[in-house]
Image 1 (cartoon, one colour):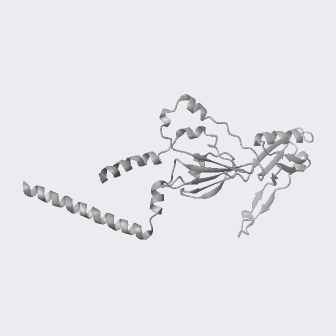
Image 2 (image 1 turned 135 degrees about the vertical axis):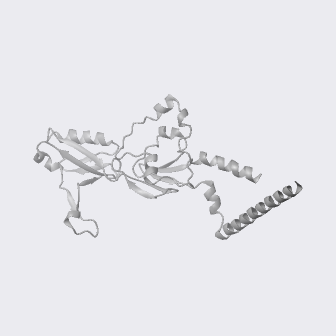
Image 3 (image 1 turned 180 degrees about the horizontal axis):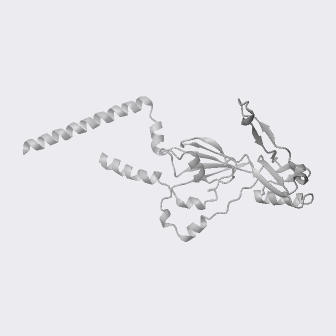
Length: 264
């Protein structure tokens, strides 16, 4: 009976660790639902770099504060200096203070929409101006049952839950892949959702793509939780008992084999 229980338990393990179960059976409608259009919206506390270019750099110079240089801690070599573009902080009201233009509201706009808005305002001074806005502090975090717990900076502001798991070195074998917690700050209000990455329909979830400051927690599976309930002494005792039972089982098998041979 014990062997049957162990075998049945081992058969269930792959279903707990395999991603995208049933993906080959998805319908055309399900695949269409997975084709999401993703846009990052600018929000309060974002840090933006804004570069304004033109055929005549002198015309747009007032819109481009000079880049600043700094040295990484402990580095004195001039060649090790790092140069950064000036950045703008989006305040709690969703505004930035931009040269010449003054206060500009950008919160809620996508990066593309912010480019268009600033360009429409700047062409009054520089008709051929082009604007490039980037979010430079787009960060997401992951912790729990992953190989590398960390906060990750995303340079292109586009990352899915699967991308983040890959950056973290994948989930451990003890991870609960069916109940991953995503915590999101939505305009000051915290919200959360549970994600199942064993289900291929996750790709059509509105939470498939992550937003700034999202936190992902991968909880342990039941096996690890059960093991955590035992103290070291209890685990040692359990190991001894298991070893004794294995020995008794082997001895019983040998005795039965000898008895059977003697009867012949």
